Image (cartoon, rainbow, N blue to C red; front, top):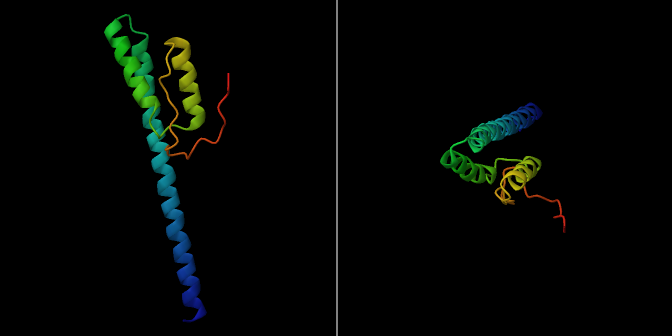
Length: 109
């Protein structure tokens, strides 16, 4: 195979890898944005004067906060919100997230 064919093959392969990486990053960003829209919806419901609507907001918040599309740092923020406001552990950690396993150690307090 001539050298020009090898160069074309290598450049083509790099282009395909670049496109695949871009699509993956875009999908992750879209998933995180949609999760934050859902969390915002939930938090708006939790401050409702209607107890049923507030309970629904917290229930859905717990489900959405545990999705794998949320980064570990964002999950820590949601955990603090749920513990401060509801006194619950709604946003449990999940090591199967889209952002990889959480490598931080738990605080022994």
